[in-house]
Image (cartoon, rainbow over all chains, first blue to last red; front, side, top):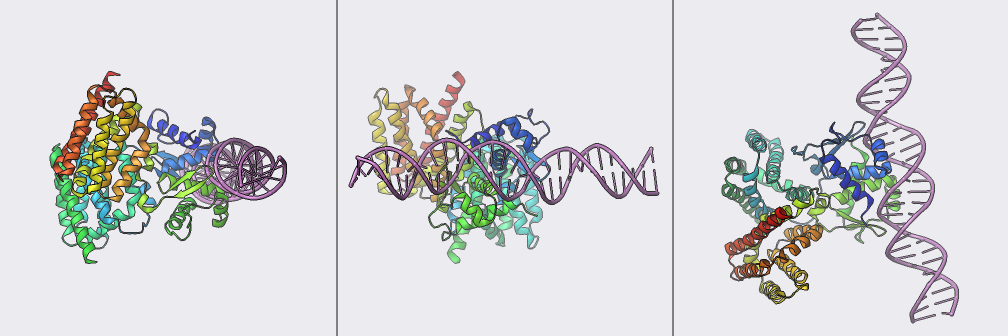
Length: 234
Length: 234
DNA sequence: GTCGTACCTTGGTAAGACCAATATATTTAG
DNA sequence: CTAAATATATTGGTCTTACCAAGGTACGAC
């Protein structure tokens, strides 16, 4: 028998996804909602916290639980609990991404909306803007880089895939950050990453699936190569 | 000021990742741990549940919270709560597999060992053997089919990828079975699936990466198409 | 030594309470 | 009448206590 908590999480998800239910964009007060659902406030909180960890809502103290719009790429949930995994998985991680992200990019090229495209362009523009900035450039750039990849996955319009990628991303968050940081620290890299990302977004803009696949493959394969170099040196 | 709960999550993460602390691979009972950390059991539960939602631990009723080893990170933990309407679920699932499995097959072709190859051949032979058998043929065949796909992923020799696939598979096990059953019930299917699998294993045997990618793509894309047909009818 | 039975452990759930800070309503000063 | 000051209600954050059910353990009966 399924745990009541898990059932609650699912129930709340359905309610969240039906815009007519919580039309004001936030959940009712915990006490009210718990009473309405016939569960204790404690159990309801556990379900709500699960939804927050999964990135569906945003809980603000003394204000309520705000539903995140589905077209909102808010990485705060996954970035929140950065972890340090032991061992050296950077290469495996990048290799895995090299295998799965290119075909996803191809699908994204076919299904992206205009709005998603414009948000991708924003990411590229921001990447261009931070290029050359000293110090803070790397970490800021990494965020936009991360967001771009996430946007591409979302644009593929497969909810399972999105959850899979988000799960991978939140779990490996720290490692992904490390690899991004390492790469962005290379002098030759920022310019290269920018042109590769441009090519990717251009292909997606043209609804050129094959081009998007190839652009993403190029980008990640270059990253993998560089990581292998770095790993060989140090 | 950060919420106490979030701080707790981080504290627990660090403890989990230091193997010396919970050397038995599981967290202490909630009551003990709460007392040791100086927080209430309820708050500790909220933190533990967050960790479960993020895929770091596995909570089993009356048994405890078991730590997942870093190389066993279950990226698909969040898929447990992915929401969709049942009809599209199977299609989304197959579509996801169509996107990610072909490139993996290509990698497998390059890295497979002789032993892995022979086990793949066994699967194909078994599939051929059960073909034509009435009734039980479908469910038996599904097992060999499942094993073949798993073997291919393992042959790609990327532990992260293997975990990703295994996690996805165990989470979606039920639904994967349903789609397999639906497809194997079609008269035209068993023969087709056999020839497609043969082509896949042949390409892997020849270390023909492009051929393996294409064979896997063909196979899954055919499956997706059929599923769409079935979905359209009923 | 084997088998039951009682007991203990442990996660799941409920209920009630208090805190602190915010939002809102009310009162008061100008 | 306006606006600042204040009182009140709201709401998430946290703690405490309690009970349940099922799995594990220990101990006694035979």
